[in-house]
Each structure stands twice: as structure tokens, then as C-alpha cells.
Image 1: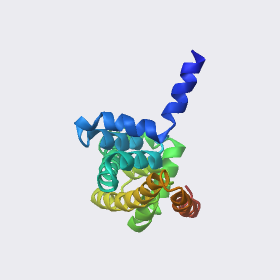
Image 2 (image 1 turned 120 degrees about the horizontal axis):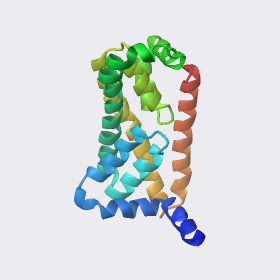
Image 3 (image 1 turned 135 degrees about the vertical axis):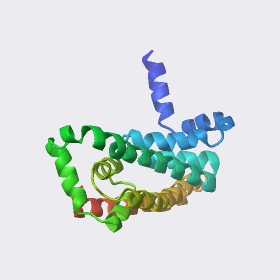
Length: 199
């Protein structure tokens, strides 16, 4: 039993497993890769970098990028709109008494669209916190949506570049150095802005 469990745990940790899984759902068209990126917005523990890499490996650079962008953008929009249209209107009196919520609202009050764009476009910033905090705030809804769509586009371009480079590295190992360099650069920039803006 333990041998079987160990086998499957090792199996699902490989990119090849997820590529095969996505390939098995190709009859669904773009639905599977879009849903995979979508779910990441609802479950932040899922690694977006791995999801984009899987989508690109299974569907190619252009479609993998588009599916990932659509999925993660839709997921973030739904989280934002849920907290803006439902939680804020119905439960705000209760939420406003919580110190953590008030802290999030105070944080948003000091941010503008330019800061929002930078934070959302970086892959290692807490997107779920940003979606919830801005959803509960008085930040202009249309401005948030437009900024989110543009910033997610930039983020997906960066992650797609990493994913494509990583895919190539399976046959050309020298590209692994470039892939690691891209990921490290994105991570360091994200850490810098997280510290700068208290995230």
C-alpha cells in the first residue's frame, strides 16, 4: 500500500504527469487549462508558475499563455466581485469589527492604480489578499478590473516565457539556466515590492 502511495505521490509531482492529464482532456478544448488557472485564484496554495508551465507544455506557447491568462483573470475577478458585491454589502458591519479586515482596508487606502498594477503583475505577491482587500474597499470597481486585466497579461507573459524556456530545457539542458534566471528575477522583484508595500 505504501509503495503504491509513494509511486503516485512521486508521479503527480512531475510535469509529465500533468501534461498527460491535460492531454487526456483535450476534447474539452480550452476548458481544462482555463479551469486549472482559474482554480489557482480560489486556492492560493496551488503554484501558478507550475500551472502556466503545464499549460504551455500541453498546448503550446500561445494557447498556453492565453488559457492561463483567461483562467487566472476570471478567477481573480470572481473573488473580487464576490467580496465587493456580496460580502461588502451584506456582511461589512460584521467584518469591519475585525482588526485584520480594517488593516487590509487601511492598506488599500494608501494604494493607487499604478501600485496595484505593479503588485498584480508580479507572480510572487499575495493575489488572493489583493483581490479580497480591494473587493472590500471603496476602490473604483472599473479601475480595478481594467488594471487587473492588464496586469495579469504582463504577469502571464513573464510566466509564459519561463514556462516555454523550461519546456525547451527538457531537450536542451542549457536553457534550464535561463529558466532559473527568469524565475529568480521575478521572485526577487516580487519580494522587493512586497517589502516596500508591507505585504
